[in-house]
Image (cartoon, rainbow, N blue to C red):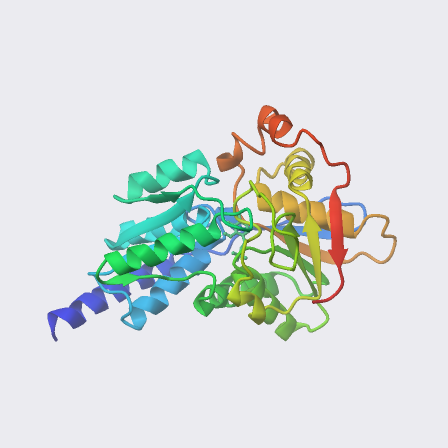
Length: 337
Ligand SMILES: Cc1ncc(COP(=O)(O)O)c(C=O)c1O
């Protein structure tokens, strides 16, 4: 056996052991007058978010295909959680990783990345849609040109990321519940919704998949604008969206997301991040005034609230950031896309 093969087999064994350690996340029933409501706590994954699923599977598949070797330098744009997941995995596997982040990234996230990666690139230029993604992606391309043996997972287009949610997140839901009537999913790269929707609809085509996006994001044709909550929303239409089977989309304001976070915390004791608040707000709005038979509704809590202590959970930041205080919790909704 050549040393190259030995290296690859060693890396493969190591990443497989990490995959074997990935446990199903809890699915908790929440008290609700009208709904059988369940929250899937994706923040229970090993580095604290749903992105552990996609990062691990993307990396495993890239090692399997020999796109990633011991010499590789991984380069990726992330609003935080994907970078944290990849940084943790790369540190464990002894691989170099250069995360490309932006000024919206939580301070604790940036500190974590700087502790694990010797080089972190931070962009400051707001792009023509009011976000940072295009600037981050430009920086990724510069780094790829600069670094020999670079590998770009490209989480916005990599179908292995969606496959992770098909194989793991959605399979866990199908094993846990015999029928789901509605699933609400926040969208960023669309990897989660692509994998979940395909697997859930394969099991039961009647399930309604509701995509949740935030004001200022362009994913579903919204007007581009400044966004401050990382994770959910995007300043591009992610290529993975074409793989998602979506019945309806709901657009939530950032302020509504914050209210959703506080309600989720105070009513149910779930201390979750901004996108979980967006999705919880969307569930509440969707079923406002509903009086029919109890639907069985699932939503995902993609990350924990800790990283949002200085923003979403800081009343002073909220008052300064949203002085206009938008009253309508949900600003618009569209029918099937
Ligand atoms: C907190 C949070 N919520 C939601 C999402 C959206 O998930 P996806 O990128 O799979 O669409 C992300 C993605 O980074 C996230 O970090």
